[in-house]
Image 1 (cartoon, rainbow, N blue to C red):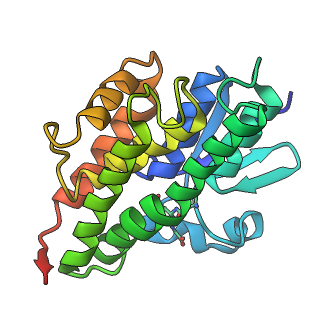
Image 2 (cartoon, rainbow, N blue to C red):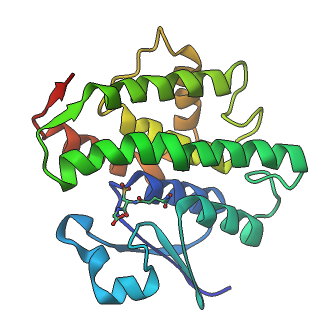
Length: 222
Ligand code: GSF
C-alpha cells in the first residue's frame, strides 16, 4: 500500500468526513493543509491535482481523487476489511447513495456551503431568511431519514453518517439544533460522539469552523 495523502482544511466539513473514514478504517495518512482563506486552492500546483479546486483531495499513489463522498466510498472499497461502511448489497447501497446525494445537492452545497461562501468568502454582512429556513428544512428531512434508526442510512454506521455529522455540525453554527424538536438527530449526534475516533477526526475542526462563523457579525434579511 502506498502512502495516502489528504489535502484539506480542518475547518472544512467535507474534509473532516474523510478524516472520519480514514480513522474508522485505521489507515495512516499524511494531512496537507490547503488554506482556502489565502487562496492556496487556486495555485497552479493544486489546480493541476484538482482542477475543480475543492478540498478535500485524496492522493493514493498515482490517483488524485476529489469529492469527499467519492473519496470515502473509494477508501472503504479499496481498504475496508469488510463493506460495512459502504455496503455492497444493492438496496442498502442505494439508500446510502441517496443519503450522500442529498448531502451533495442540498444539505452541504445548497445550505452550508452557500451560507459559508457569503459570510466567509464573499465577506457579505447579511444572509437571506430563506437560507436559514432552508437549514430548518434540512433538519426536518434528516429527522425524517433517521426515524427510529440509529444511523442516517439504517441500523448500521456508514460513510453517510460521516458526511452528515460534519454538515449538520456546520449548519448548527447558523441555526441551533433544538433538541426538543429534533430528538432523533440529537440522539444520533450523541451516538456519533461516542465513536473512539470522533474527537480526533472531527472535534477540533468543527470548533474551528464554528469560531469562524461566530466571529462574523451578520444580519438575516427577509
Ligand atoms: C464539495 C467540496 C467543497 O465545496 C465534496 O468534497 O464533498 N462536493 C464536494 N469544499 C469547499 C470547502 S468547504 O466549504 O468545506 C471548497 O473547496 N471551496 C473552494 C472552492 O473553490 O470551491
